Structure formats: structure tokens, C-alpha cells
Image 1 (cartoon, rainbow, N blue to C red):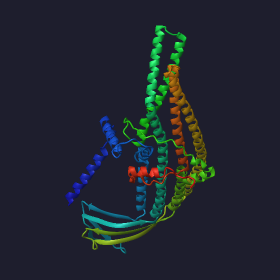
Image 2: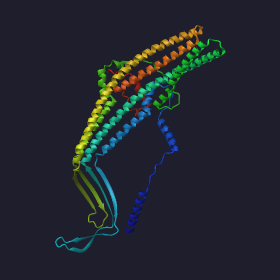
Image 3: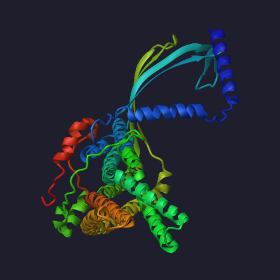
Image 4: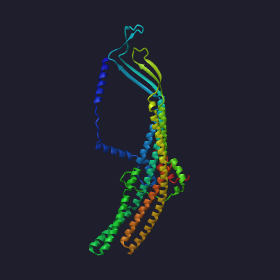
Length: 495
């Protein structure tokens, strides 16, 4: 056994020496590893997303964004993480159950000698009181009153963080809903106008080529010809600006619903039916709804609750700690008369220096409460201002859409008249191109005004904090989620 003990000592010394000499050097990730991880990430992001089979409806676009959008998914995972942390904090309030075993070895015997307490003479006898090699093992339970109090308030704070994560998820879902409305209607306008814009550009370029040829052949007045070319170029600039405006719509929509980038998405354009029902609700009622339902305000309330719990934690930390221990022990030392024994103990401890830091700790915690209250009040004022602005923007966007629709209707009828006159040789090609360009611009502005109307309605709903009670989107199928959105699409906010 002595040889075994020496061998273990040498091994431990060698291990400590080697670990002391270890030098960790930074290692950069290789390009190959980055590319492999990127491919894996793209596969994981899209593997649960069903492909688009039919034309994409607005309700399906909203459902896909709420269920598969990476930003919303991140918020869902953050909420799940906070919930798991709450489970861990609840376990922190339980007693600690410890079990340990240790091996002890000496290179010589542990010998003790006694001395007479009256005469001071040492006894000639010497006693071996412990084996050179023995194993001590124990198992027990330890419970601390201070740990219980701190764990209780930690769990309460974590419970508030779980709800904060839920509110942030609500906010992310509202924001992605706004973006989907804008991207969907931009994609619808691109789908509707793509062919018309292409034909108008081809017509304008053909007329420009004819005008330049006429300029070279000197068959028309040079000044009028150049004015004609100038107007054609201006129309081409406007048409190309329209095409550029519409070119990014597909990518934006695909990114929001987590569809493959570069794949053409055919959208099923619904009727443009205005729903100004929300404007019939009084601003006072809206303010009351906002104070109780807005995600930002609710988050600040929970932050204030966490700050107040921090004050209580600080007070608990100033109290003496009372701990209880119970252990079952076993020792292989043959010199012990009782090799098995139970041990119970109670201990009261107090750090006197904590009294010195107590005022500073309490001031810090109370300052956190004051700051949290100030942030909550500031958020309330900001959200109320946002509510008034969102309501005004929604009302203005409705007026803008109605005006844009009237202008488009006039340009559309004017284009029909000019086209008929051009076919009867009563109108020039330039007039047709001018009218078609104006009609396309009016149509684009009509789509833009409608998209802004839907987005401003979504912003108003986000500020109010109202959404359809569609349940947990991660546990619902895509078809069920679409049905839920259709069911609650016509919500009556006055109720």
C-alpha cells in the first residue's frame, strides 16, 4: 500500500506540473468550417418549412411569418430558455444532498503519545491511532435558511423574466406582421405591373430609336425631335424607377416567410376592402387599452417588479444564516471502534462586515427601483404619444389611399381614351407613352398607399397591444394557424 501511495503522489505531482505548463493558443475558424456550418444552418432553418404549392394568400403569408420567421423563432426560444431557467431556480430552494468519498495515505504511521495532566510526565507508551491507508465516505443533507430566502426571490425574479420574454415575443410578432403587409402588397404590385412596365419600356425604347433615326435622316425639325427624345427619356427614367422599386419585393417577402430566396412567389391578391372600424373607438378607450395591453409598457412593469424584489433580496442577505446538516459517515480505518456514525448539526453564522456595506447595498437596490419606475413612466408617455401618432397616421393613410385610387382611376380612363385615339391616328405615340407612364405611376402609388394603410393599421394594433388569440404557433400546424388568422381577422375592437 505504501508503494501505491507513493505512485499516486508522483502521478498527482506530474499531472500538476503538466497542467502548469499548458499554453492555450487562439485558433481561427477555417473558411471550410465556416462554409460547412453555413450550409448546415441553412438546412436547419428551412427543413421544417413546407414548400409553397399554390398561390400565396395574405393569410398564409402571415401564418408562415408567425410560424417560420427566424426572428420570431428566436424570441420563442428565448422564452423557452427563460422558462427552463425558472425550473432551475425552483430547484435551488431545495436542500443540498451531498455524497463524497476520499482516500487517504501516509508514508508512516500516525502515532500519538499522552501526558499526565497533574504531573506533566509523558507516558512511555505510544499508540497508533490511524491506519496509513483508509477510505472515508459520507452522504448527507444540508439546508440553509439564507439560501432558501435568496432562492425564493431569485425564482420570483425569473418568473418576471419569463413574462418579459413573452412580451418581447408578442412585440416581434406585431412587427413582423407590419413587414408582411408591406412586402406582400409590394409583391402583388410587382406581379400585377411587371408585364405592363416591360411593355411600356419596350414601346418607349422603340419610339426613341425611331426618333433618333429621324434625327439622323433630317426628316423632322431638330428642336422638336430633341424635345420628343427628352420626353421619351424622362418617361423611360420613370418606368425604370418603377421596375427598380418592384424588383426587391420578392426577396423581402421570401425572407419574412422563410421561403427559399430567388424562387418566384405567386401571390393571390385579395380585394382591397377598407376597415376603418378601429377609428370609431374613442381615443380615451384606446389609451386605457394601451396602458393594460401594450407589450413595452407591460415589460417595464415587470422590470420594476424585478427591481423591488432585488431590494428584498438585499434585506434577506443582511440576516444571519441558519443552516442544518445531517450526514451518514463510514470509515475503513480499523482502529476506529465505531466505523459507522450519523452526524447532525446546526450552525448560526453572521458576517459582521455586511453591516458596513448594508447602507450602500440598500441604496443601490432602491436606486434600481427609482430608475425602473422612471423608465416605466417614460415608456408610458412615449407609448401614449405613439398611440396618437399611429391613430392619426392610420386615418391619414386611408385618405391618401382613397385619393390615390381616384387618381389611378382617372389615369386609367385617360389611357383608354388616348389609346383609342392613337389607334384612330388622332393621337401621337408620345401621348400614349405619357399616359401609360402616368397610369403605371398612379397604380404603383395606389398599391403603396394601400400597403401603408395596412401597415399603419398593424402599427396601431401593435401600440394598442391587441392581437388575435391564436394560441401557441409552435404547437399548431400551418393549416390550423391559417384558419385561426381567418377566424379572428374581422375583430370587433369596440367589444
